[in-house]
Length: 259
Length: 313
Image (tube, each protein chain N blue to C red):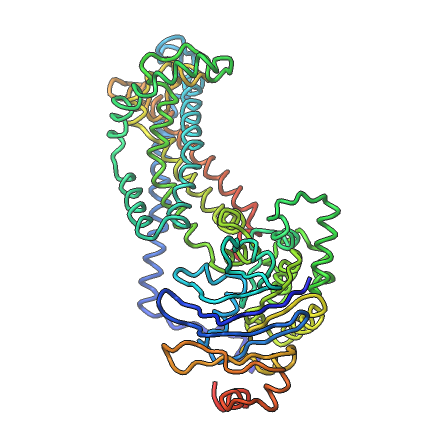
């Protein structure tokens, strides 16, 4: 289920503009890795290259390799559609499909695989995914109601349920709590802690307390100035990054001297 | 404190607000007034038609309802056929412009579609007679030969090609631009969030469109179709020019005998009408008015029944 990600010397371009330069990083399975750094430093851009979602943005392209258990995502003949079924993603703002019921939202990704499911299988999978996202008890009586009727935090957990229903190897989260209140944030953070047992999780966050609470390893990205490419400055155990970083810029950022 | 809260506080009336709110009220009432004026005119003028006797009609028609029945049928039949042809094509064009075409091509295609909407209907009528009817006539013969066992396609095929099916094609071309234009606008408004959600689940482009774009755009597609249907129901010139009418209900699509439509029938007969004949034609107009109203109400009901899932909340 859970897989290792290895990135070798990755550059990301928007048309001709170099947005992220020379990132090399190894993410171990069954860990939570947090990406922190100031706005515009390329963390979101970089996390999107881990499931080729950057290709949705016109003109975006990469150089370098991303290996998931040794298979290069950017190898010739690799279908981005299959990559995304393997590497799930949760976005900054909760985005359940408004036209679908809660249950259909959970099953949306599974149904894409053209699998014809019996009703009992579908119900079982819905329950499993919703339990996995700590949402089952709150929505079990209204599975046929629209997903957009839930609160923001519930919607975000619904999106997580939708992502884990397809049983991916890796789950990417791009600031999953930035649109949520503290209680909902806590619920998601607890969930991340549990999901670590089964998945490799990468999370982008602006909230340094959140990074220190949920992650095992932390990567600090920074940018030298506007128009310059974002770079990976330091990558280490979270405790090291927050207590004894080896680069001055990391220490300045985590201690709140800038950013 | 409590006494102060009991008296309602009046908001200060600003002149700008007042002018603007009166302007909107006037515009709103104007549409109602115009609609009421048309409805009352039709209703009053129609009354004599409802009691008209056999002498007032040509042929062996005995009362107004047997006169208007085939017309209503022809109107709805041709308009629905046109809609069935136009909507899938319009959705296809709109999706191509909004999600598949390169930006430059999409823009010029958009202009082209809008241009099509500006062509007067008499031109479409001429095109229908001069180009389309002779072009499709051989196909009609073949279709009748092969599929004549299917009642709506039964023969004999029209020798001129001027059938209700040809009319429907002309109508479909006429309503295509408006449906396409609205669908395109709706599809472009699909939130990027939902498109990305679908793609991140491993949807292909087509699956993304089916999951996010089409469901989101459904109310818009229905509204656009209703506008197109309204135009097809009321279209006069193109139908009057192409069709050779007969006063019966005829299901066959490809024969020389065809039910007429209400609007075309009014246009054809109004110049020679006198006395009760004028009232009868106006009464058919009233029936068209009611039919259009019912169609639009039906569309509203369909849209509202899915309101919770529209994403508007």
